[in-house]
Length: 275
Image (cartoon, rainbow, N blue to C red):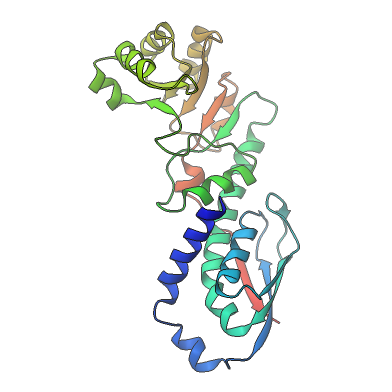
C-alpha cells in the first residue's frame, strides 16, 4: 500500500507543480514558516489523512503533521482534523494535492457508511467494484474499507468473474465455468453473472462459487436466493441505490456491490487554513 501511496502522490505533485509554483515562489519568502489546520466544512467519515500527510512529507520530510482524528471516524463541521507546521513554501505547494486526495477519499468513505448503515440488521455486506479512477484504485478501495464496506476483487488478477461477454465467447455458462475451473489455481473462487432464473439454475448446476444476480427485480432476486439454497454465495449488482439497498438486502443476498461508491462520489468539503 505504501508503494502505491508514494507513486500516486509523486505523480500528482509532478502534475500540479510542474516547473514550479510561480505564485508561491514570487510571494513567499524562502525561509518563512507557517502553521496550518485542516478543517472539516461539513460532517463526514474521514479517510485519507495518512495520504494527505504523505503529500506534505514527500515535498519536505521535516514538516510536522499532527493527526487529531484517524481514518474511519465521523467528524463534524468545524472540527480540526490535523495541525501542520513547516516551510510555508512547501505547505502551499502541497495543499491542493493533499486536499484533492483527502476530500475524494472522505467522500467515498462517507457514502459507503451510508450504504452500510442502510443494511444494518441484515446479513448483506456492501462491497465496491472496479469502477474507480484510473491510477487511484488503491486509495479508492482503502476509502471503502474506512467507511465500513469491503472490497470486491482489486483487479482482473485476483478473482474470476465471468461476465456476459465471457459467457458469449465461451459458448455458454457451463462451458465458461468448466474452462475457468480447468485453468485457475485452486485458491480462486469462480463468480458468474446471471440475468434471469434460468441462468441462475445453469450456474448452480455448473458449480459456481458465487452467483451474481445482475439487474434483477427484487422478487426475482428473492426467488434466486431460494433456488440457490446456500449452494453458492449470492451477489446483487446493478441499479443499487440508497433508496433501494435495504429492500435488496432483505431478499437474502449475501453481497451487494455498489459501483456508485467510487464512480459517483461527492468530495467531502475540507479546507487548509493558515493561522
